[in-house]
Length: 168
Image (tube, rainbow, N blue to C red; front, side, top):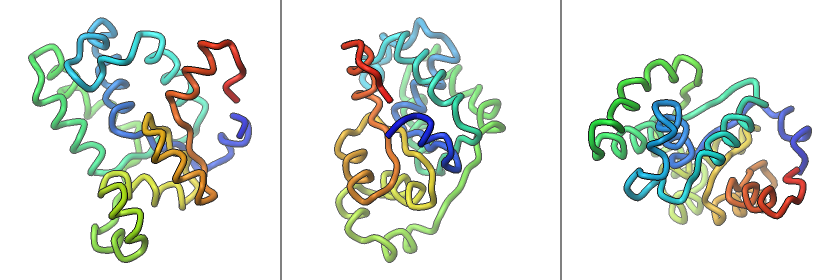
């Protein structure tokens, strides 16, 4: 799927680790490679690509479960990372938050919920509602695409750019 096909969707939903990369990189790009587990595989260039890619969409959406995971990951880290947590409200003014009761997610799609859990079930629901899901989870992205919805595997985009192939 080309980028021009994606940007006509309602907007973009960013998975937990990439939203974490966004918040930490905004706070201080120098913290990206040093983040204990979650961001150790990301670089400054990944952050810049994430920003460039998400700016193509008119609306960024998230869910309470994604924000909870991001908040918990940041809260477990030393002070420089917690500063990113303090700046979350500034970012949240630019992101639309949407949610569903958990029981509704389970009833609507018990297979997705059982296979991926609550947070990813919310991303699948957003994909069903015509949002592009941006994730680093190849299995989740493949599952969403296999269901006929739009998802972009961030790792695959980065790999294509490294190999100098068109990402879209």
